[in-house]
Length: 121
Image (cartoon, rainbow, N blue to C red; front, top):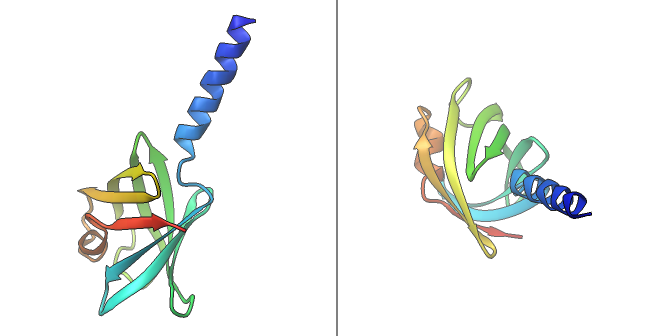
């Protein structure tokens, strides 16, 4: 009985740490050409970034997350980040997430995401 309980607890813990971002939405203001409020819609393995004012799609990104770090690979959108993977640490406290640049050769993405503070919606 103890082994079963431990197995269930470990499975739940592994699932909850793996899927922190999946099926969540966050908003922030990014400095694009102008200061622009956007929201991030995390799917199972894709991230879509929309302009809040008119719901227009800015970027579609393939993402992975592991141990408080996410990798981003652009699939489509306005940035010049084709074929470049960016890595960012993320820390979630209550309903806020802070992104911190680890490495990203795409300056378009790095300049707007480093130290970005997102609020859960």
